[in-house]
Length: 315
Image (tube, rainbow, N blue to C red; front, side, top):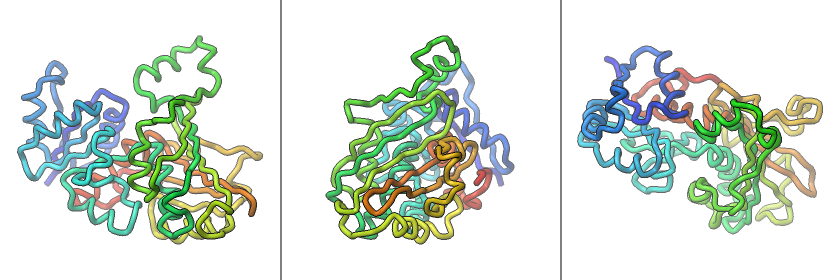
């Protein structure tokens, strides 16, 4: 018996990528909305309630509207916006978050897919807080570098049109220090306050890495960077999509440089630790279109419908 799936917001970057995943697998019946009815609330209501799973790939306000249309108590909503990521009645779509999270996702009818920056930050920070290495009062400082696909259709078009010299160099943004992913970075790490977080968009299509800074003297437990790598390895042992890279291994770098795009077209997250006893950084790398968005949504769907978690996803 096939799973009926509707993508509400099928024309956006995330929606198109979800379609790409779905069309490559068996056992899925895609419910398609007529182009002329994409904003017809009654047609959207009909398709949402006819589905086993509906992906919401919409702005926050539109996602909330679509969520209000559900009348079928068997329909699972998987939302890719920021609307529900800190809502208590929505499961956070990061199976690797904690031991109980995967089981919650298997039974949830409302799932909020994490933001791309948040996924990387949370996966690197949560084990340190849980282990007591980082105090909940820790003042985190992080930056991210990401491909321009995360900015949506207009940004993609601007970069791919060429001719704008300003787009050739890395561009820091969200410098009011109020990035939309900050609330979930706090809610799902155990920290009491948001990190000082500065993202940077680069002149490449996809790929993302979040770097967080640590001074051992500011930690709740005195640890070496090797200890942190071992903690990551233990925390994510057996996970299909999260890997703790060996400490300072030569193959972590390319002639001394870090490759932000190495996880592109996969659902994998790689965690690195670089530094020494005086200071170190963690780096979490993922594909912002994969584990940072559409891949994570598919992973959540797999858990929800009882399919193997890795179905249709690359490591």
